[in-house]
Amino acid sequence: MPEMVQDQRKTYRHTLALDTEVHCHESSLQAMFRCRTENIGMGGAFLPASELLLEKAVDVELVFHLPATPTPIEYRIQAQVVRTSDAGAGLSFPPRDRECQQQFRRFLLEAKVAARH
Image (cartoon, rainbow, N blue to C red; front, side, top):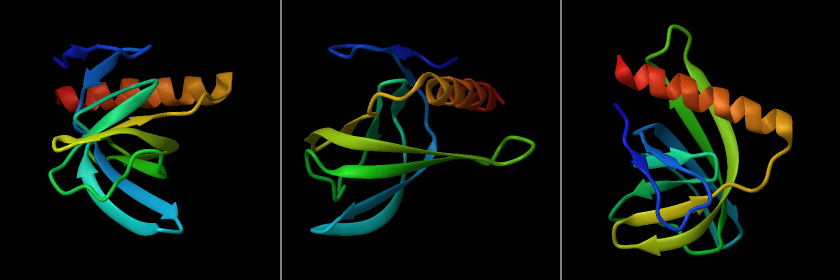
């Protein structure tokens, strides 16, 4: 069962490894790489990696993939790098309207269910 993680965050994060594409569109850093989330919640995610190319305050687009579901699911969300360390990068998701929040909440629920199988 996924474990809840919380420290100075406003929302809970769940320990959940999601296949993720990170798209950087900044003029100084145009790249795409793949990794897996360590934890994720409504307010952000942590991407563990020893050689992440991300810098604090960089805006990125994350593309999460759930291939284990009957029909593969993809979810895209904008994020900003708010913390970097040797362990990886902490990202924050910007405020979203009610409908987008509900869609993301449903995606996270499906991801947690898929992770149990």
